[in-house]
Every structure is written in C-alpha cells, then in structure tokens.
Image 1: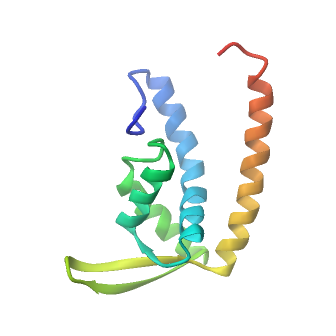
Image 2: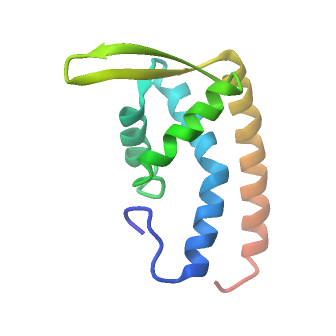
Length: 125
C-alpha cells in the first residue's frame, strides 16, 4: 500500500475509500495548522505524502474538492497569487474556526481510533 492504492481486493478498496473520505479533511486541517503559513494544493499534497507514510498519497485531485468544502464551511481562507513557474496559485490557510474544528475533530478521531483499537485487540486479524 505504498502509494495509497489497495491491493486487488475490491472490499478492501471500498473500505479504504470510505475511510479516506472521512479523514482527508482532518489531515488537510492538520497540515495547514502545522505549516503556520499559507500553502497551495501541490505543497499540501506533497506534505501529506511525506508525513502520511504514503497512505494519503496519490490523491492530489481529490484534495481540491475537500479544500473547497473546508473553505465554504469557513474553516479555510484562500487567495490567489501569480506564480513564476506557471499559472497563478491558490493558497490556503486555516482560520480560527478551522483551528477549533481541528481540535474537536482530532479528539473525535483519537476516541474513535482508541475504541476501534480496543475492539481489534481481541481479534487475530
């Protein structure tokens, strides 16, 4: 699963897709909060690839709809600046509401993770 793709099992691919849909927004907020400065989509994708151990990589095109949704919800701001290396770039930064959401979502994630881990400890999967 180095590049984020599931092996041939269609059930595993479906599970990973559903799991990813719920965690990408959390990961995006975390990356932008940790950065402390605005980032454009490619930078965000590369950072996710670096810190996410490949699990969230390979989904760059899927990031943009999530970024737009987070912005529409008031959790991110964005602005466009010219680029020396091509077309203008849209930069994203986390808002105060985004920081609050990140705290709440991270706590919910940890509680869910801990609960699922406790259940899985009893299996031999």
